[in-house]
Length: 375
Image (cartoon, rainbow, N blue to C red; front, top):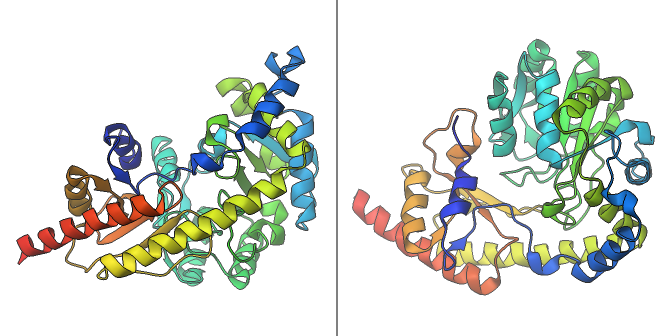
């Protein structure tokens, strides 16, 4: 089984390597003091260390239900299933609903592609465009599969945000063909300007919305969730029970306590502001030092995605850069069948402006040498 290029890179990079590869949050933004306080409160009762129910602790599920209801998507706690990260959610969903195949974006989130592939789920890619994806191609494929996996908010890897019009049309397609769209909302709270309504709002009975605390609170908690109709969640719940009984009760209680403290909103505003500054800084470095790399600056998320000149093999270039002390992810890794591509993804959330300057300088110098060799 093929491993994730990103996970392999994370294991071999040195301490001096400037990595634009992983989707890692900025550790300096973790709410350490608030989480320490939450830990003390949670551990004052032994129940946080006890077995729990498979669906997740009721108080956290209710908070998530209220969160969706506040966006206009009426939700009860019974519509929420807590998972061990969004990655487990995608794994469980694919094993239940994608065995006959699913439509995916091209390019798409690598972790999802790997989960679907590991579960022998056929994938049918649809190209992305600036406002979402090719709706005609999508509908033609969706007619056959009745299943799709999409990331409407600051899509990984491209950073594209689906327009509200596209979201509504996708919802109508799901309803018309009586299918299911899995909407991955991992980055929906990392907006720099505005948050659009989730596509699930327009087709609540035909969607499963996947969320995560990894990008907004701390990935080490390994906390995700699925929001969906109870009938759609029931087989996933049964499979999760067999897989791990339940997600860490301690992690759930910590997240719930932090949320209860009233600090979550302030924390989200803090990381949005910080990531916008980081995005601007990386965009400036790419523009000034690596002008052959073409991209559109995103309005949220954690990544800048673009293309080198078409004759470039981005994976060859990435590996050459790695030897020199900097690395990014070649775009070919984000397609169901890994391909030679001039596309590339750069993460901006986990580097300082100084590291960005040094890392892009290394990549720019390596790129010039690479181009010289090709002539």
